[in-house]
Length: 107
Image (cartoon, helix red, strand yellow):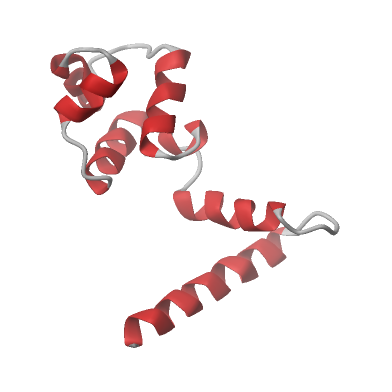
């Protein structure tokens, strides 16, 4: 997934309009629309970081390099006071999280 599609999906998922993001970024609504459509060749690093803050994700998630689920697992794992997690252990954490969420839906 690219920055442009990720930006649009995250914006909509968070309930922001183009105008909301434009105001928070101090740019025009047309600029945000161009970001989402990919009509800007290179986005400034500062804009990527600020957008990530507004959307409450890491720049890696915004860029499409990492999913929000992966970010959550790494956040959970970061609070462990032991050794580093293996890839298999991180996968198990993710599976357990999905299991707990599925139980919530059944209630």
